[in-house]
Length: 565
Ligand SMILES: *[C@@H]1O[C@H](CO)[C@@H](O)[C@H](O)[C@H]1NC(C)=O
Ligand SMILES: *[C@@H]1O[C@H](CO)[C@@H](O)[C@H](O)[C@H]1NC(C)=O
Ligand SMILES: *[C@@H]1O[C@H](CO)[C@@H](O)[C@H](O)[C@H]1NC(C)=O
Ligand SMILES: *[C@@H]1O[C@H](CO)[C@@H](O)[C@H](O)[C@H]1NC(C)=O
Image 1 (spheres, protein in one colour):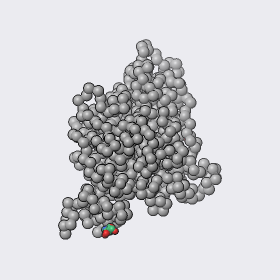
Image 2 (cartoon, helix red, strand yellow):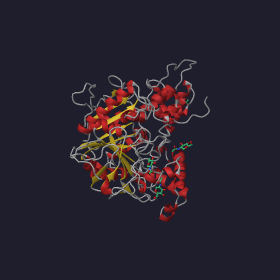
Image 3 (cartoon, helix red, strand yellow):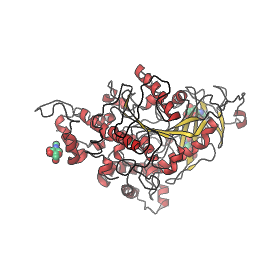
């Protein structure tokens, strides 16, 4: 017996993401603008129909926007980079859009990257509550009126960590390859973004809406089209995109969506559970809900410490729907977010094209991070019971999907981590994503489903030996493929980056990831009965496994169904 068998719910996404670990690739010299008059910066070279005047090394790229002059730097790969503050918000209040163009955090340095929003395990100088910033990557030499699309990236990090300057998120190569503007946005995290002590919810998601309003206002000045905005994101960022699809007030702010590895099984949080978490937090920081001054006085450290308590105890002390992995999530409040966007309530009518992907071994970091040595197959039943309860657990064990090869053998050395990894991947990501795709199509939208079978170990995953094995693609290993930021890519990685950037370019422009006239495999959209998940980096469709319409979501319910979120 292993002494302690944590529940699988403990699984996910607690993979720590190094923030600001690596600086973005070289710019052509940090440009010090202090002392230079703005007029001098603007287009001192002939301006022949080019929106972005200066060429490399000559000056600060500068663009006149509706909100003032945008100053940036020439980034590494044929793109210009602009850090900008898109909004501001008082603590636990909704954000409002910036009315003048300003560098993040009051900076005068156009090369500087935004400070991240407050999160655990970083020093105070790396973060700021004044964090509603984004980094825009703009292809060079865009012509005025080019009306190119914009892809907005919402980073992951379990709603409690991450930022626009995370490793691999330099959007310059993606911008160059797709000819689109790439905007990597920040939003408030953790309790500061999702758990206002007096009942405010979804502030972090509302920050994204503010960012989209900002983009609609400014992208035309860069050669973008305000009506060609696609939201894309990974993990909790993807979860926020699914929520955005259910926000009527955001509906005209984007035309299509890309959901990469949404832990969809969890569902959103219910207002009831949100309210319990709020009570817990308020009691921990010893502020009465009515005492605004008390909340205002709290240091960021005190808030993060209480957040950490909440995170550790919500599942056991508050409600199992909190999950042990992601208690702080968006809230299905019924007013801002008007649908659960899952199979528990009628699906709203949808029209926006959707691209939904997962990776082969989503649960790899969690399972192999949690169990660093072999799990005897006799323990599988135990872990499954502990995770799902015996009713669901025994249906899972009775199916043919997760049996160990040595089941029923008196002695077997089979390592059940293989089955646990498949199980975790299936219910939290893969099957629940496929369920969404089929519902989406049934409600009028188009959905293209994919599964990465080639990836690149994201920083952090490389510390888990399983994730570095050939052919294993762990959660987050799709990110650098999409951004084209894999360090020293193999031929297979480089080829998949080329393919995905071509597919994204097509999707951003047309809502269909099949580029016209290309030799790439045809990506067939999902139907109401078949997900048609294309292997990304492989050939043909991904094996269906347990992701049939009658198993996950029906014979065995997802957590969002069990907890009636
Ligand atoms: C912070 O570090 C601690 C100790 O290493 C770790 O347990 C925790 O998960 C980290 N928190 C985040 C948000 O990364
Ligand atoms: C960010 O801005 C705040 C408030 O102006 C300031 O106290 C802090 O030093 C700034 N941080 C950095 C790293 O510039
Ligand atoms: C501007 O920011 C960049 C990137 O953080 C840094 O390398 C550079 O030293 C800064 N320049 C000045 C003048 O502070
Ligand atoms: C799991 O639950 C089932 C049904 O209650 C039970 O028969 C089985 O013995 C349990 N397994 C373990 C290891 O507790």
